[in-house]
Amino acid sequence: MKKFMLLLTIMFSLFCFSGCNSSALPKLDDYILLGLDISSNGQIMQTLDFSVNSQRISELGEEKDLESFKQTLIEGVEELRYEFLMNFTLLYLQNPVEEFKINRGLIISAVTYNERQDSVGFDMLFTSIQSWNYYHNSGQIEASDGAVLLSKNTQQGTFPFSAKQQVGEDESIYVGDRYVQIYLQAVKDLSFNAQIDNSYSPTLIYDYATFSKRIHSDSDLKLTDSLGHKHHIWMVNHNQLTAENTISMTTYQVNIGLWYILCVVITFIVGVVLYIFYERKKIAKVFKRKYKNH
Image (cartoon, rainbow, N blue to C red):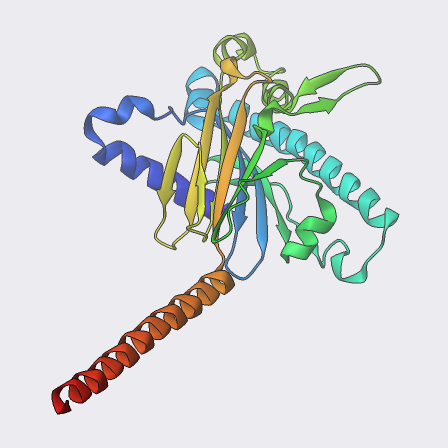
């Protein structure tokens, strides 16, 4: 949650100071965020956040409508949290490892309403990279260019909201559509639900934040916050959500060992050349003296 507050601050600042390019930024009255924050200490925070847009609800209804909506939305997001918890629990039971158990290797927060951000959501903290790898199978395509001194590794994957989720034996739905349904379900019992049904089209945001400066991506925005996190941010309006939405990240890794070997080899070659040059000069002087004596 704290990370997303930083994200909103950054995007607001960019909006205020970017001048003529402000049209490129999404209107954040309605958004659903999936965030992944990789800390320098190896912990990974995964965030799911729904904007409430209290102003719109208040304008359309009464104060009691807003409180009823918040509570219903919290209950809907709580169902999502429970699904995550059950899936992770099943994964753990298949191969129990004490250090990765729930509430130790993985800590899932409660679903709460954040008044400052006007949002409802929860966080999942993986206490180490090993814990993250234990619970996830990324399914990403990796490609290496085979470079020796500088390796390039590219990962391509589906935009998280474009992933398909099973909702029945023979039925699946986009993750983004499922999340939108949760929001709309929360307004179903309100007298003005038809107005929101017709206008609700949130910006779907995926924010990948890391301290690494070696990662490059095809994200819509690349921002660095005051803590040094580099954010790669993809944004798709719900109306434009398709299976074709993808993300791509490339990591460049310098092979320090090979560069060291190369430096040693170059130094050796230069030394040999200088030695040969010096010896030749010495021999030339000897011959020159002998020639003068004769």
